[in-house]
Length: 222
Length: 263
Image (cartoon, rainbow over all chains, first blue to last red; front, top):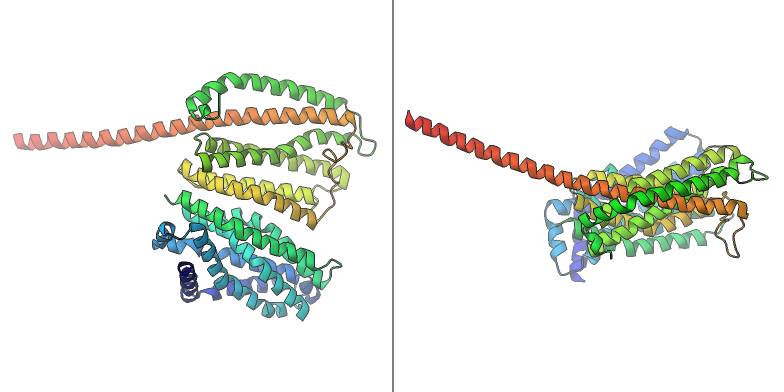
């Protein structure tokens, strides 16, 4: 347990201190959201209708782009080999690393959501709904993306290939995240059903992600 | 003959040499029967002659999912039992599955044009098949990205199994997202709602396409085994050339030093 909490603390500290850390992801998120009005026009009514979708897409891309550092840096300086050989199960270590990554890179995106909601003309309730669905859904993105990150580090390839592999897996999260936020804003649908499924997706990926990532690290690094 | 006996590639090659002509013949005969029957099948009272696209479309769609199942079993073979032919089977199946999925999309879109008035409709089934196609292409890109076949095999096996778990979830969520396509009509509780004059040609075509897949898959596996042998022979040859040229350089060097000594 102490080993895992030490791992989490170390990962968060590295993420916050090296190279702008968590702010880079937020900056990317902000840039994507700012680009949208240039693409669809500065129509406030349209932007507020598209708002949840834009915020979700921005968060999806931002969390994906920060993911390839999850194992890469540790692989370069050799600490990934130490983690693999240590007495802590590799699955738990992977889960701890993903949790640390989510705390350092995912949580700032959710904190930034209210500010970005203002830019997109979302009211208080809508912004709250989007932030809540992001809070429930981004763990699923991190834990599924971890599989792609593990594949990328064993293949020494990252970037586009990883995005192509991971993005189709994140479609359910996108669907239910946007559906739950739309249910609050306009929909006749209830908020509960899509939101519960979103939480379920996060829990399922919490189980599958560490096992798949550990399997690919174990088979790939030797 | 068990699965373990097939682990020997030479034995596998010998077996497939004997089996493949029969399989190919059976495929051709069944395809001919199925096509003849579907040409004779009556027109639908609503859809007219376009209903005959179904006899091509449905087997392709069925195989697009079946092939992922075959790859998942092969991936289990790679990761759990380290079966030597499992990664060959998984690698050979991916492009064939992608081709079937593409054909399902293409025929679906051609069918949708007269029925819905548009080539592409973002309805649930078309969309989930499109996502399946994207995943096939991603998997093929992963196979291509890595030089060493066994390393690529293990990465692709992990991804295939993750995809096998995720595909039903994706299917379910896309269904939630949009439902316009007609509900399932062949497999349904209380018997099929499809008329017998449509059902029999459809089943014949489904079996014919499955046989077609088995034939293509075995042939592709043979090719992959032979390709790997050629690759290892080439690498042996390359190392021998490198070795002998090193030796040659060494002996020349010796000769030169002798000459210098004689002078």
